[in-house]
Length: 469
Image (cartoon, rainbow, N blue to C red; front, side):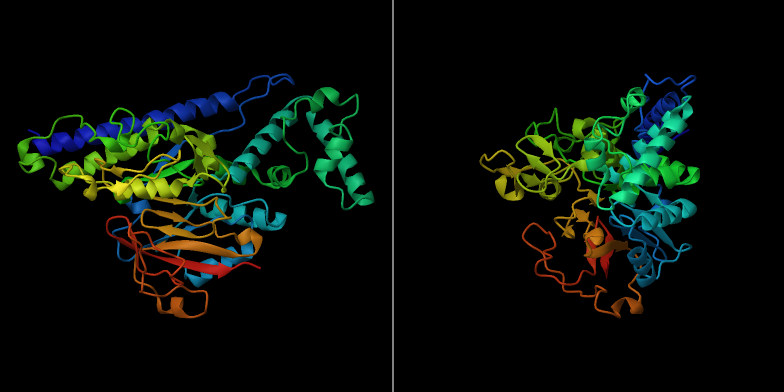
């Protein structure tokens, strides 16, 4: 006979598995539909996105509670292989003991050979990570090249274009492909006009993305295809995305119980008994953990913007009630995320008065008010925002510190005590004097070094950086 607690656990697990299977199977079916084009023709452009919406990491894949292991999450690399190698050396990365994760944009912008080298490393070692917006463009270019090449005459047309472009480069070394395509009428003769109409609008032939897509191996392409848009780690109450994730739908009040997952306690598959809740509401650890995971899943599935690939690949700010890819203007999404997480009162708190909440971050210029949310906080690790640099807050870590712009490459190192060698050299972070503001955010303007940073409920992290030149 199953005990009530077992029934609760199995019920919650069933919902979670159904969620994962739905997304996984659905995307698998869509993926098969995308690539199974029986007789390609020049008039049928297939879906080139090949999105993998989500991957869920088990505790062993994100060993937050294993004191003998570390999680090393690297910011945007952009083909900067030498700084990446230096970073791995600096943190004394051990493939046996450590878990390596990246936040996307591992290729393009940097040296072509560097992009292929970084991609080869990631694919060879099957490194966990997420897609960046530039990785996505390379995926789509490769899909397009494969599609065009599968059509009779397609390969020959591409070869003709390449020869013409190579000749132009020999005569005009400073002539870029954008200018060439524009001045040469999309680089198409009358014979090639029908082919050139198959180039998606806005795409630039012989761009960095095109070249990497053409030169990468099939196994490297398959590695990129396996990268999801989002990583979710239930045991750590954390997410990894490239650009960002919303804690609420900006079109509605953060306290709208019908629209916002963090505004209400989620419903379990089976109502817990008095024994399971401890006799006074939601108290037992098992029940709280189950509810937290359900709420975190709702954040991924019930906030419409979080299901939009463009948002998680490109978002930087909230302007009014809309998503923006621009850094200037509006409110950084992380400000809203951290304000909402700091406003979480748990599942069994009495909402007393405004003094117990946190000021709402206004995105529309209206008056701010205190928030009271029925939730527990979760953490997001992301990249993408190089113009803002390294951004460390209590419930979010922005790791794109502009390596491709000759600034720095950063990594978030979670777990296990710092090794002695970390304190050698000026770029190794090693201060225990963490400075926080009133909201619990780490104030990096006052703190030069980043060690013993709180991560989630119970983790400790450090930021390690190396110079990029």
